[in-house]
Amino acid sequence: MDTMLTIGVALGKTAFIILFVLSLAAVLTWVERKQSAVMQDRIGANRASIFGLRLWGLFHIIADSVKMFTKEDFTPDTPHRFLHATAPVIAIFLALVAFAVIPFGNAITIAGHTISLQVVDLNVGLLYLFAMGSVAVYGVVLAGWSSNNNYALLGSVRASAQMISYEITIGLTLVGLIMIYQTLSLVEIVQAQGGLLFGFLPAWGVFLQPVGCILFLVAGIAETKRIPFDIPEGESEIIGFFVEYSSMKFGMFMFADFIEVVLLSAMMTTFFFGGWQVPWMADTGFVFPWGGGWDLNVLVVEGLRIAAFIVKVAFFCWFLMLVRWTLPRFRFDQLMHLGWKILLPLSLVNTMVTALIVLWLGW
Amino acid sequence: MALTETQTPRVNRTVRVVNVSERRRTLTFWERIYLPEVFRGLILTARHFFVNLARHTLNLVGIKTAEPGAATFQYPEVVRPHAPRLRSLHRLVPRPDGTPRCVACMMCETACPAYCISIVAEEVDDPDIEKRPRSFTIDLGRCVFCGFCVEACPEDAIRMDTGITQIASLSRNGMILDIKTLLALKAESEQGGKPVDFLQQQFVS
Image (cartoon, rainbow over all chains, first blue to last red; front, side, top):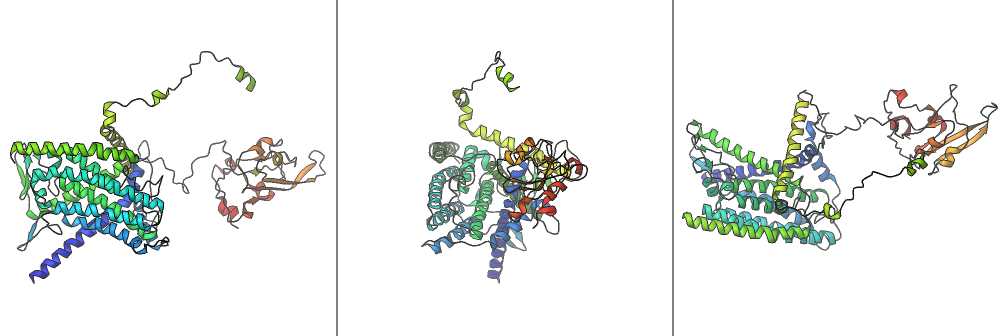
């Protein structure tokens, strides 16, 4: 009976996180078009309608997916038909599976059962995230390799070079966090961010590692392969690794892209912006540093925490869209210059300084 | 006129020479760091986003803002006003009795760089007119809308003031307008400035 309950809870959490991520990614396809339109004094997609109801173009999500599923699925003349069909699956699978370790709320206790609000509480959750991020390049590389197309191959070669370069920076910036929090478990990292610095500032990663936060954000955007780092796609020079993909196979690559945006937002939230922590909120309610407080029911507190996580993730999705529609694309040499000559030394220095401070303070 | 203009002595005119080094000036330290400039760009686009979002929201609840949230014309429903000198679809101007003003002088056919006008002339008994077109066709599939035919016409018989810009057909033959159609078209000002949906009116073949 207990096993059944555990399995049921695990399935429920998995369903919640997959539904949350997939629906957020679907909404992001709409947000991308609409936000760019509003930023550029345009109106954006607003024509798809059901019975004359337009809802600011929200039905374009449905219209797009119907289009994706019903278009011709063209496979190029290639000896790697199996790999060609597998590559988008790998891309979207690895992007989705990384969410397993992201905690979206504190552990809640219902009827004597403690449920941790994440799919699996790995004690090496951070390494797991890295692993999934690193393997994610396989989807891209296989797509370019199996397409039997020079431009696709060029795109995937660019992608692998870019992702390997920027993964080093991501890893090194997080070393600073690991040194501060002394753990690889994402649950413990988030719990450690619930304290206060100097008595009033939430102990979020962004305040402990401001340089690391910026470096991680830059390298993370490079990992998502979106503008200004969309060298693998480079739609004005080569179409990119998915040039030979059509219909829903292309749609899966596109969707994996948006899922990676959500993933980067969730990682930013978890590592640097307190995860599900609400500022100055303890388990019993708000405790303000300037005195006073506001007692709340435990369930309300936990609900607010889940809401805080979702709001933070949504904000970073918005912010990444803002970056994507503001900056132009780097050249390839500029990309390598930024990655190896600027970000890597900076992250090394950041790690060194953090190590010295940690040693000095004796944490 | 043109002669006097070229003969005007060019005194007291300072010509601004743009130096190449001025265009590619060296960046300052803060610009080379790039991050502050990135933030400036982000602030600019974010300001556009929030200002336009506020305008859209206010307009949605019925409050008019000084500027609209978007510069977009919702095209098929809202058509952007035409400039008066716009060269739109041609028409033949009729005399008061309904016959064309055209005297089949072939000036427009000669001036046309795209060879899209073809006129067949015939004699008229009226000694003031002498000639008139038996047929006058314009192949819009060839027309480049240069307006030379309008310039060339000595009788002001052909004009490009219908305001019709939505020209499409399902066949090449549908793009050829004959004299009857050209005579029936009216100026945009005569229709109260309302553009005609030409696809429904004429070109569905």
